[in-house]
Image (tube, rainbow, N blue to C red; front, top):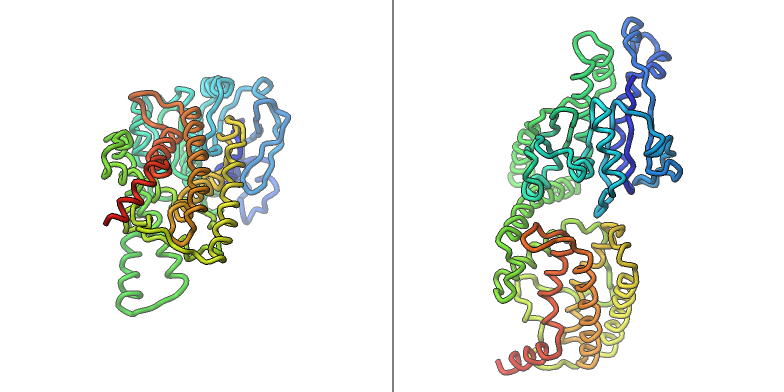
Length: 447
């Protein structure tokens, strides 16, 4: 009867397409073999015939999902028949749908009865112009941003939203709530196969307004105060729970800060030190929140330790120090690794930057962040500092030009990722210029 499909963008999250299993659970092929004590015979007669299509642009190359999973496509854009139900998952960070994909989405929307967008799956639908004038939702942290960049859509904070043919959901597992709601709206009701399967298979039925999150938040605070503060309990579970809670809360507030930085155009106020510090603060915190790996330069673990409460000028020594041989060798080894990584990054073709993973971007950010401890540290010789600073100036200038070439932002438009990256690099560049470095050393010495 209906034909669920997953339009394959590069490397979608496999949890985003897991809700396709909902349709299998009420399909005739699965239900007919179920024992009657699981599904009564009178309900089996309500099972539906589904024909599943997995679509890629050319229909030949397997679709690669996260978790090293591959999906064999059944159709291409040209051979795919008209679809009744279309399921879209989130795609890889930085990916943009091409015109062929957008046109295929428009055709699917015209033919189908439901277009189900899970997590970031709405992005391709938005770029195809299908959300204009619609009410939609997105992952909660992105809603303030979407309200700015796509004001033609009414963005609201819901677990899922239904407007016409289009269904949108919050992050990942909210897709299960959305397809269950779609099923109830389409085939549900008392004494139906669908309601029986949803109950027996424990499909989630959470409040669409995230009411459970408010209840859980209050319960978490109560448990925290009773067990940890009053009773003095300590355990690894508490540490892990607190880390998750703090990360979730910080992200929401940080997103508000980033939106204000953009609205106030603080990145353009290059002569306002407070504005620059605010930009760097938002950038540094947002980078730290998404770091999934740790860069461990063990020989320099003490040298690279910095005090975030001190201003940037505090890392400049009043007079050159006399480092020991081990420190110089460690610094040389560390900077060699940094240099190799930056040269690898800069050697990549420009169009490949869109395919870099979150891990690779995080490595770049952390590499840039720790390098000042080599270029300006009192524990590294003046000659080594000068060499490192000169090379870093070249690397940062090259990265700045690349970010400018990659940015699609225009004057007056919302800055994209590459524009913001370039703005941060432009703030850092003056610290690496020989004139600026000499002036700062002299000023520190005069004090």
